Amino acid sequence: MPVQRRSFLKTALAAGAATALTTFSDKVEGQVAAAAKGMAMPKIKDVTVIETAPAGSRLTVVKITTDQAGLYGYGCGTFTQRADLIKPAVLAYLKPLIMGKPVDRIEDMWQMMYDSSYWKNGPDLNNAISGVDQALWDIKGRMAGMPVYQLAGGKCREAVDTYAHADGREIDDVIKAAKGYMAQGWRHVRVQVSLPGMAGYGSAHGNSVDSFKPLHDKPLFEPAYQYRRGLELLQEARKQLGDEVELLHDMHERLTPNEAVNFCKAAEPLRMFFLEDPLSPEDNAYFRQIRQNCATPIAMGELFNSPHEWSPLITERLIDYIRCHVSQVGGFSPARKIAILAELHGVRTAWHGPGDVSPIGHTAHCHLDLCSYNFGIQEYTPFNAATEAVFKGCPQMKNGYMWVNEAPGWGIEIDEVAAAKYPFRPGGLNGGWGELRTLDGTVIKQ
Image 1 (cartoon, helix red, strand yellow):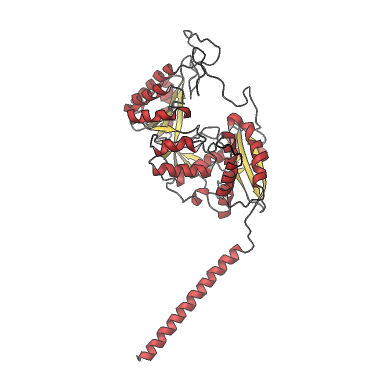
Image 2: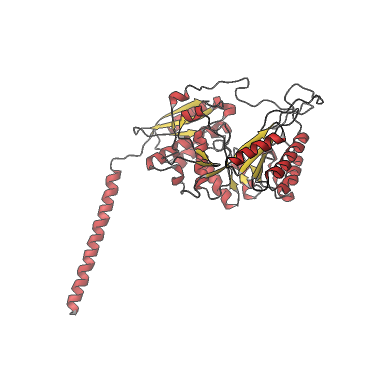
């Protein structure tokens, strides 16, 4: 073939390829433009608060409605112990701040709300912010047609491993309950036993003991009795349940710092999954003593409000599991940052999941658990029939694993008519915790 002809063919082929590429590029750009044509970013049209108590605990959910028909989202702002404070915090302070804002700028809006009160890191404001933050993530997921975990990087696992709560008046009752959970497929069980004659934690009050003569008529608690009883429970549980089950136990900040150090050290041979909350947040410095004295895994964080509380424990590797109450720290956005910080320092997650978290909050836990590489375990509290009637699409439990329903956003719809059937019913302390005192009348942290 003559050189001139070969040159002509090469030129023609190159021109054809360039034309095809340009045509393809134009086609793609045209498709994108057509898909986005006329779609202005939705803005916040209204903010409302849903208050309901289908299982007794007072649940608070924020609903954000946009100016796009049918587009809205839900977020958990539940603070049961001070439930009446969250609705006005949202409506009187946050709503005027965010009305008319575009819904896509979640981080920007979080920072704006966080700074708006000047004094920061309080549980009332944090829970209110959480309601808005989670609702915005729900909206973003609905807009994308994806579950929230997909927006945060996608799954690291198929489902969420959980632990169940086994408790009882006597140690044998606890062992029996734990065996029941194990038979249902749970691999992790938290064990708690009552304290005879006192108001223990995590189980029914113990039988009365006439030998105690407290100098008051309030609920009684003595740390030394709890120390001995708790250790006896763990020893018997390991003996009777074997080595295959993972044991957890909540100390609930009720021992003195020195007793807490000793308890963690004494529990080390029992090879626990973790001991929860051995110290109150005021005593965080004692975690260094625990770490220096034993290798018992420690979980901490459900009472934390501020980065000043969790950051040192994570970065100094003084705990093994971070278990913040997600709405208490401000919602999905800061919790995701906590998980990433923890991953970088070898600390795993174990978000606080009691009955005083709404199903929206529990679902946010699940999405964090699915997309966080350093997931450890998730606390599980079952939903009753009334709760599932209000919150359509709750995560489902199968063999000790929680499964989300894969619908866009959180995948939950709230029946507000059903929710209204279960209004808040304040008791004597309006949801707050009562006093707990030692024999001589000293108040105990709980």
